[in-house]
Image 1 (cartoon, rainbow, N blue to C red):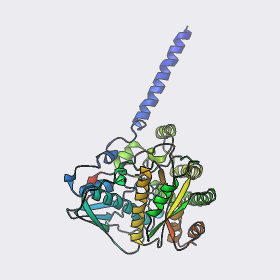
Image 2 (cartoon, helix red, strand yellow; image 1 turned 135 degrees about the horizontal axis):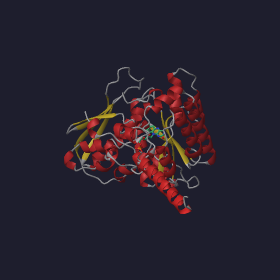
Image 3 (spheres, helix red, strand yellow; image 1 turned 180 degrees about the vertical axis):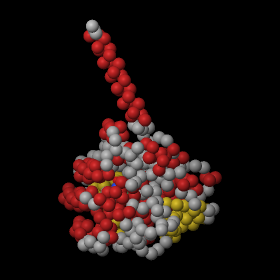
Length: 392
Ligand SMILES: Cc1cc2nc3c(=O)[nH]c(=O)nc-3n(C[C@H](O)[C@H](O)[C@H](O)COP(=O)(O)O)c2cc1C
């Protein structure tokens, strides 16, 4: 006869085995190694000694934001200049049919490089490639978008430069009832210029109109199989994929709670449709529901290449400034992605009309939408490709 004590001991052993198995599986799936491994090293090694010369700019540049973490950049480095090329192979298809977002991401890299230039004792001068944005080339080739000319200058301390490794897109909940301080909003609005304007939405009424536009755009995207599949192509949902590609959105950076992140890693990845439906739910229930402030970066011409690059520079600068103020930021660009999608498909410009009604302007066109606020949780690092993969 098996004693009660024997049964309990057996059950205990099974529990230990089960728990042990889960822990092993969790560890195998990267539950305990968030932000670790070669894909995350560029965040630690970015500030190298000045003897490296202009390569220091590239190390800062690759830590910039980019759409879907596509890192669509290539750099050519000499003693006198760093040339920035668009790697048009790294596109988002129907999510960005005119490479507008790609150029905003390239502008983000430019801003980090300009900050690094001054911090490393260079006087930097940017020249932008002009012209209009066009469709994704059939045979993509790197093309020059900007050149940073370098001359000896004075090294200057800069809080935005220091914030580069602490800036991360935060997709988690924010403290809804804690407003963004007025002086921070004013400082941000002053960073706009003649080409790019910052439009802020902070009152309850403004926010609910903004939120409705974002949710409606997300619903339209989730119902568009081409957009879902083009977006899905960049998702890296396993540890192996992150280690191999070192790009794309990851589970760690999705803004989920630690428990849900751990569960999501242990369970099989959702299908593209399920994943994007969850994104719609998070947009509605977390992203827009908890934000005390929203904003647009607006330009006079959505298709002007230099304006897109300059909008990217401004976004990176705003996000770095927010970081110095312990504020979180998160692009929520679905409404503008839909404008491009409708134009590409020659559909009636409904999304553009909705945006014009929201901003009460047709002279300034939103090219970038975001939310900001005090975060409930810290954001995780996102992976970056190695320098060797991006320097020509
Ligand atoms: C042009 C552009 C558009 C973006 N759009 C979105 C978006 O709609 N939703 C989102 O969650 N993140 C968006 N992002 C943020 C990127 O996904 C993010 O920068 C990238 O994953 C790298 O992560 P990091 O910013 O934390 O370094 C966008 C970034 C850029 C530059």
